[in-house]
Length: 244
Image (cartoon, rainbow, N blue to C red; front, side):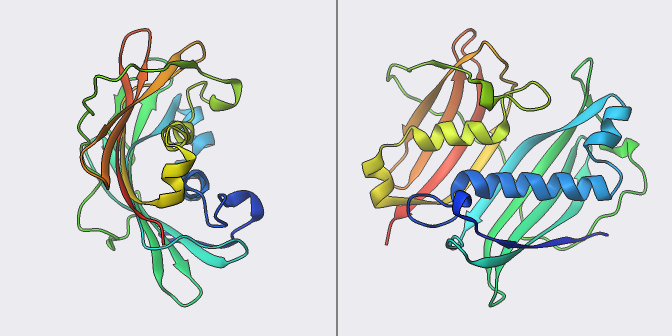
């Protein structure tokens, strides 16, 4: 029960234009197996709904050694790694058929009250099982805000970007950031590491823009900004490498 393993195959709709697992589906597989394991451990979506609360992803750190190709089989593993006050931590790894750990991720989650949106202390969930193995020595950390004087281009939140909690879907933020880069940039660069802080909730009616700062050729800072109040809904640190 402490570790959940799934055997998966990279389906055609999982891949990007290069025939490799896309960043979007990488994120959604991390989110999906985390939700499934939480359900098995008795703290899933349905369980928390009964307690008038829900999970939200707070921080995420992913490092990619290589991406599974279209049709490739791999194993996805996840386990809870402990908690510290309000944050519950969970690690995930993608393992190829040779046993190589090709993608590693650590996530940090919050539980919010459904009505007040206040954060609940995780210590309220007693006897929660943990596994002491870690994919990294560190948890996902704080990402600083990008600095940029470029004019922001705001576009409205779309119907398919809203999740079951009536908030902007976490994975859609990442999609907006990835799509803010040109085809030419993606032809020459591949995302190999990203760290995200989810700060505020987007809702229907919002208009959002991507703010970007290039620290150097490989290290970038991004945020998704809301037009109505200028709030940063997420902040992201991206590491790009030349595409081989």
